[in-house]
Image 1: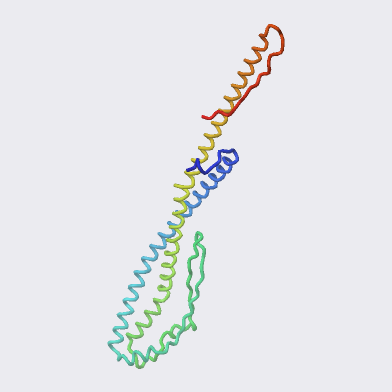
Image 2: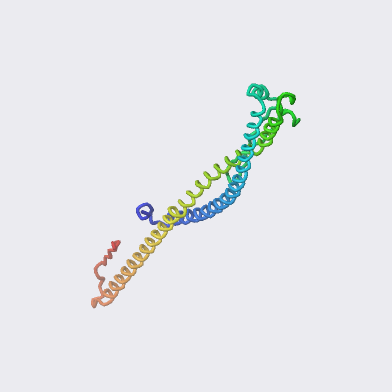
Length: 236
């Protein structure tokens, strides 16, 4: 493949050497990037696993509290108590660059800073189990946002790791070997051409020396006929 695609010239040899040098440097940088991405990805996966277990347990506790609140109140009273929320939450999304990966960052703020505004009902006509349920779901909100952030970060980093891995493999198993093979082929052809040129020069020299020797041996001392030396490229 390499022999059919490259011209065996010194200019092409210089270009391929520079290309090989750049490819090796890029290969090293991409391998370092892949290794660092893998390290940070494993850290995120461990954090995500712990956080997911915590959130799932929190959601289970919230459901249990709401079931208890529903057991102590009628369905109509529960719906009326939760019909008009008093507090509002504003979510802000931004990104940060980690090894060329734009991972998300979620922050939130509430309309008021009063922690009691999470209760949108009066305490006189509701059960304490409803208060516990509302408080547990409000406390779980930061962990749920953090879990969403971690999981999206894991997805983006996994995609970048796969992309980087394909690039590393392409350089390591395709581009660098093909370039090395092309350089080897050009060097071989240049050496072969140089040897052929030296052989032709040696033959020309021998023919000239032989012709000069015959000229000196003429007894009449007259000029010999003109010697024509024909040199041609030898095909091997």
